[in-house]
Length: 95
Image (cartoon, rainbow, N blue to C red; front, top):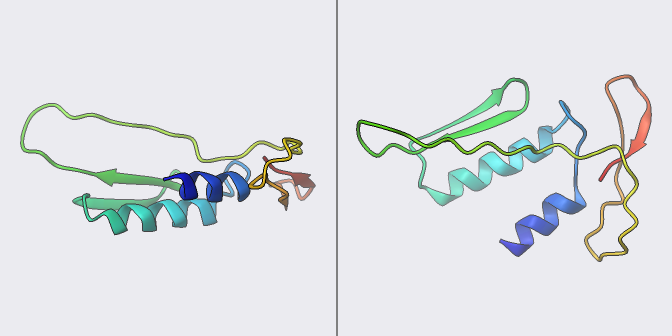
């Protein structure tokens, strides 16, 4: 999972604009072949994977996928160098 973490870290997207991130996550979940259902476009760019285990209680895991409008200065090999236009049209660094 190190390669997934590095890929997502190097390729962040601003809130409500995470289309590539959502597609990456959905494709990864499909590849696991462990989910009964995969839903995309939830609330715009959200992804939901459903695993069924009979009747009764269930567990929900929620994770944010959006990057922050900040320039990364870590110097890491996989550091984000991405800039993107936000919803107002302003180009920003994204981390």
